[in-house]
Length: 174
Image (cartoon, rainbow, N blue to C red; front, top):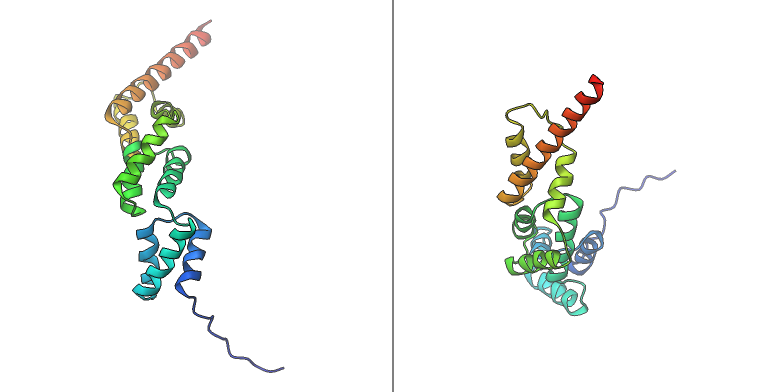
């Protein structure tokens, strides 16, 4: 039996590396550019790969913003502020693309209040806790919901919990 020393994997060129990133999920131009440069590809190779991807329609910031905004809002339960922050700061998309994606979500009928209600329905709080409203409102605020949605949803959730508790006591006393 002969011993073969481990071979280094072949170095990937910028094009193949970019395709690998896009195969996993959508990326914005800036984000993909940063990743390729961090992997040691030259600026010229990186720019050439990105230009070819844009030309083929495989790299599109507007489409990326739309897909990610839907995923963040519906999948992770983020509010509009958190979606905007994530798209611009973490995914390196332009604020105009992020705003357009949020506008498109609103036009599709995405109901931020209904999403907030759903998130709060999963939260456990005692209705008699004097800090319950603040806990619920802060939770929604941390998820990026507007202040008015946080206040209304927290108030309504507490009222529902109090009604359920009162109904439970009425049934027990019968």
